[in-house]
Length: 175
Image (cartoon, rainbow, N blue to C red; front, side, top):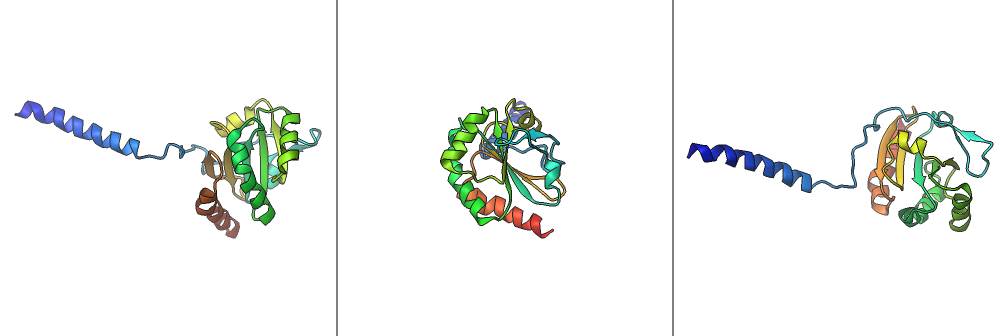
């Protein structure tokens, strides 16, 4: 009888881990950067490549950095919501055009509208790599001190905007 108890206990423990693992939302991948300083960079602006942008310019402001690309289908899905958020003027949105040709990014925004306060070009993807971008779209909420407060993997939806992003923006702006 005793020789069956140890395998049974091991089986039950593994079953609990499996159950917990299967119940997790795979879109919520914890980012090791949340709570840490946003990686520093200097990138050219998409429309004016001679002008550069650095996150240091946003110190003292709460802002979103939306990683997108002209070739990204999910980016097209979230685009109308970003346009509406931009019209509301709640939070500045910086667009990071990821691994894209400048002319393709410009053409996409010229056609669909530009929700961004400014757009920067990460043609080689190095900045995206530093931020831990898994794929596009991804959105980062950065606080007044330049710390990453929240990371959203996947498209911004009305639900995650209402339930996760905007309440956090309001909280950070009040500080």
